[in-house]
Image (cartoon, rainbow, N blue to C red; front, top):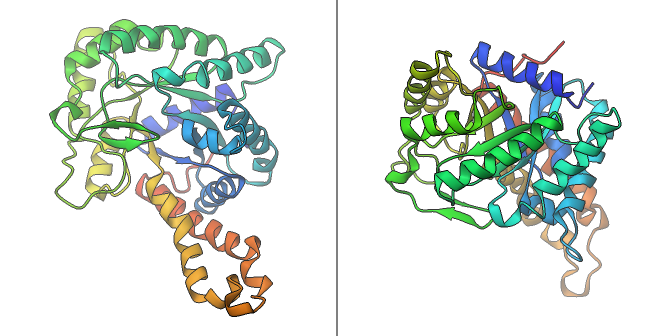
Length: 340
């Protein structure tokens, strides 16, 4: 069962929260990066999450049509086949979908999974993300209510981002400022609108100074201890201890101490994209520089086929990214925790 069923995905998240570890959620944009993520999880003996952003899905759909749904469905179907060869369990997730792309991405994918569930099958994806961080919190939560109901009906978990993450990802950007910190009032309004599991399970991307991309030390001030305040504030009103399953966005470049504090306070998923992109590309750049006269037909020569063959440098890229995934598993304490 390499692709998690809805029941198994819930079990994965429950185990992570109880064990104070989190799953690396690896953004992929190709079959190669998918294999790299799966290989990294397998080598770390960790289950994990594979995710596709709107930009990743558009890229996967091909540059002729750039259709996000086609790209996401194609890779998900591919994953259902090839993941069977890896001795781990993964969930499939779609990442960062803003309001203007819902009708071209998340809503159609929810409909596809609803049709599958109606036929007695499992959903194609196990979770989807609604990124309403650019909207007012009222509008964000109103759309979240609609999507959560559709997701729950299709046995899918919804991820919501209620306040901004700084930096830029897939064309959605926010300044790095004091708005990057979720308040207890924000958390209470979220619980009131979306419930605490009674209306469907959701993951919460709260902001504690998170920034997409990698910045030099001192440019980003993370306060993961804030998550404890959010848990406590909602628990005090609703009587449910540690009510939220948190997601850590903008995790690339975070310190071990910041990650550990986040795990202690309910983070069960941490997104990785920037670091894994670099880990995939760096070995390719090295290969090209070292084999310049072979990968190019310089000065009328014929080059060297074995060096410009995509399989040659593609294998190096896969291996480099897989190593970075295993490092993420170690940092998030998921190494060796795979379902037996």
